[in-house]
Image (cartoon, rainbow over all chains, first blue to last red):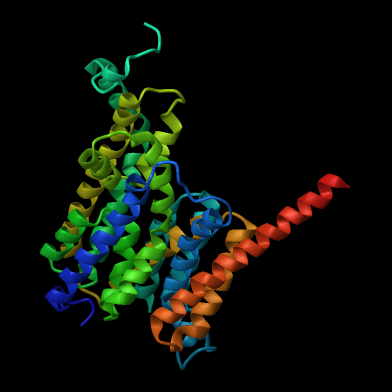
Length: 118
Length: 251
């Protein structure tokens, strides 16, 4: 069950960790192993530079917007969901203070306050 | 002495300049280290609250030197996602390190392979930012390498310290099913910080739209489609902006 310590199949968790470690290291090594003068340019460089943002947004959107996608969507309760409001607090503070870390702090603070109230 | 070292001596310059460059790097990165510690703290808490054992959380911290990759993997483990989806997501979110490695290849170019790969492994957003700020053109390679090491090794140490502290703190927090969401909030903040232009806003909005519409599809297909659509949207906006500037400039 999510939230219980050690609740996942150990073989799956360790396989995942190993595979993720290899992918992360391999990405950093690409141009250290390739011939030195070749670097991504033009359209390829542009596309590569936008990929992380698109992937991160696509990953979190269904989790953050889950309250709006559930059966009770549209009700005031769905709009007041701690998941949605704490994410909005995080985004607002990131743009206001230009600091990722303060945004995380604000989001977590809002989440605890709202989850307590709910 | 003038800057004309013989090729044979380039590899073993006196240790003085090297040590100075290393120290320059440490000074450059020092103001950024509290950020790395706190970021590691959040990640450590998120790892334990997602249901990893202490051993698994420490193992992941030691092997995977990337906060993004760790935070991205956590919700997927919780959701019981398939390994291919985890691989695709981690690959897509870490593409920026491929771009970083192009920068780094010029700094570390002639280094022995094990050292080159070791320093490459230590690349971080924070360390590379400090290196770019303190790097001066025309520096000999020995000093470039020492500077990069001085910028990067403290980040690694601070990050690991933060994670270990976070794993400890997580055990003090009351168990709650919703705490895994803290990792998601960290990714939300990271994503929001990357939105800095009309093009990146278009990438985010389109990727989110496609991810929501396609979430009933076999999951990794929706993810891939969302990224492709987001990239296309950003590049269209940039192309339109270039055309706009071109007309404004000629008229």
